[in-house]
Length: 102
Image (cartoon, rainbow, N blue to C red; front, side, top):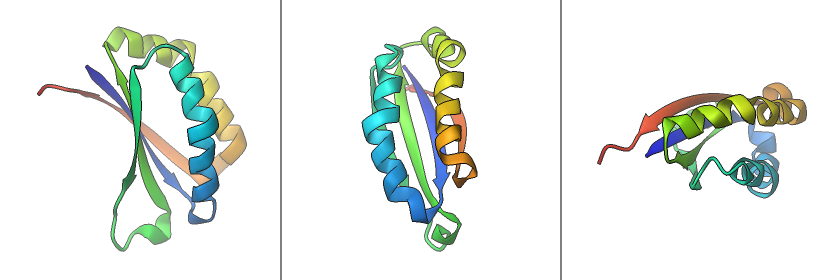
């Protein structure tokens, strides 16, 4: 199994709105692609660093690298551009790919 991890740093002032949007709009769109089996939203605790924003990790579980690559080429750019259009530089995201080995 593969985890597609999207770590986001969100400005504090809009974190609540962003999280609601993720839950009601963005994540459902990602799941509707059929590329992922499930997701988790995690808040990253960084004591003393909250002045720089609030950090979240969204983890999408995928059955194979091929499915993930299909998502990344067919759906990822469009969905990422929607987020960029809505939040601009108020949300910074980076992505990583992890493999479940145990």
